[in-house]
Length: 90
Image (cartoon, rainbow, N blue to C red; front, top):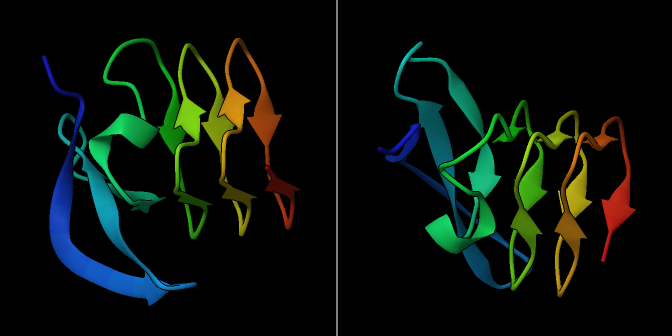
């Protein structure tokens, strides 16, 4: 079962099109992803605020990406990790 959906809201960022996500259960808008392969639909992982995940990066398990953080290239954030504020992970 899907826990989030892509909205119609998009942005161009570093030559890529990113899509705003929305939590299906709460209806709250989240952060930005390039594709659904960036954020797992299982676990409690989520991308919040203005955080961006793109390229081949993956967020899964219970990891939270928030603030103005960027996760990209081949990065994987998982377990109970929290990436927040102005952090870049690649």
